[in-house]
Amino acid sequence: MRQEGLRAQRGYKAPKVHYSGKVHPAAPNLLERQFANKWWGSDITYIHTHEGFLFLAVVMDLFARNIVGWSMGPQITDDLVLDALTMSYWRRKPPNKVMLHSDQCSQYTSSRCKRLLKTLNMEASMSRRGNCHDNAVAESFFANLKKEKIGRIKYKTSADARHAMFNYIEMFYNPKRRHTHNDRVPPTVYEQRYLTNLESV
Image (cartoon, rainbow, N blue to C red; front, side):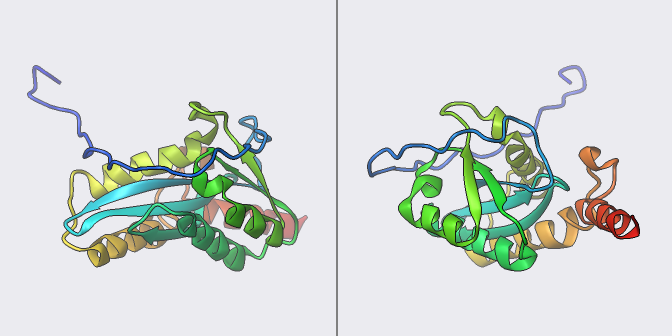
């Protein structure tokens, strides 16, 4: 790369985020890196705009790797997670309990999040502090998002950023982006094939 004058693409600096409140006891790590059809993963990232940082929370189906719910807001509060989880639930209406894996940040350990998980028949599973590997699938999605869509872009407005995220998630990533985990087919196609096979059995 040096000989060809090429440089790796790097993202922009992370925002300074101040956390407050007491430390909550974390949920056990039930995932143990064994991703199955009844597991969802969730995480939060940030997007740069000229109006300030905009935060994005996503919920991913770990079976097909599709984003089943997402939410954006100017503050990194538990509202982001609650909205993304609510969207996921009403889109999917899962008949059985869903396991939700995340890290131990305050948005997932808040009392409001715990109550919502109970209401939606979900159970929390969390990685131990300082260990990102168990949540690597969500982290990988954010890495692809920033490489393929954001790059070093600083969006003019929050509305521009929201529109860009909608286009990437709903119009490209879920229905069109090929995924190595899915035998090189998009998440939506992979899941539909699975459901079709179930119906034919």
